[in-house]
Image 1 (cartoon, protein in one colour):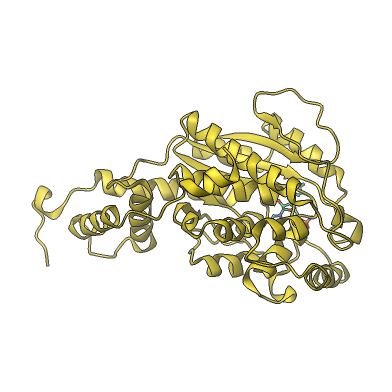
Image 2 (cartoon, protein in one colour):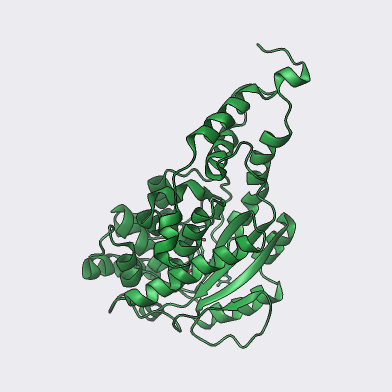
Length: 351
Ligand SMILES: O=C(O)c1ccc[n+]([C@@H]2O[C@H](COP(=O)([O-])O)[C@@H](O)[C@H]2O)c1
Ligand SMILES: Cc1cc2nc[nH]c2cc1C
């Protein structure tokens, strides 16, 4: 599927299914509104699926998109670039935090090399080689990607989403791995929301004060140099994005086109969600914000999208970890509509 056919398949939530879910929530054996955000979530997912109750979000699949970044040369992170490829091998072997959380939540993990610099010399069923380019160019000096490269990465995400849904996934989770990728994430968030560089730039893996100051300056200078136009999401992704950011945007669009919920993880996924919403505002109906990352840009992005994070645990890891932790919460919100008795059926008196 191309970007265009995917965008054409994205449609608004179904108001009738949402009304049915709201009506059912009011008749279930609990005080109205007592499940807070979970009630709103169940209504949104009914609208997405066009049915009440919507299907349970199981089985679920995580796709971790990995890429490297030319902006690493600006000294925006203390970690060496080769950690990206090394962590890809760790994901494939099942040894990273996302693997542990996915086992706990009952999700499977696919690792997608969309832009790792060093070749990943592994042949494994849970690794997809979809490398578009061996790392981006330095966005402080020139556009990170050409429009064609950005499109190719978006289409990798679309292809992965479709393959996972075709394989039976009823819920998708997008994760990321890329040393230095919180710098393009912050720049994307500033570009799409109009926020100042200092308001969206965070400490990533845990940078010290001089590195943080450099990072804010890099984000501000990139915005001034490229003047990204938020009405041209492919142009924004090409100028100041990353290959995993673009692939995640496509992954979110692919989920929306298939009307399957997709749980958004931290600041990288949130920046991709802004790009997806700029391509297709109705895609937001498929998005569930799994958690509130420590990175300030994540909160700015989620507020811009009108999404409320389900968990707030002080996480700042990425890989899809916060989103995987939210999966049982999403499943519970849907299960209420399947399993809970009504006042009528259970013979419980109303107030
Ligand atoms: O998910 C988040 O919000 C998040 C916050 C801070 C760091 N990360 C992860 O850390 C890496 C990027 O951090 P940095 O400092 O190198 O830009 C990358 O692999 C991300 O997955 C992720
Ligand atoms: C070790 C390590 C693991 C990660 N997982 C996601 N981003 C990461 C960054 C580092 C540095």
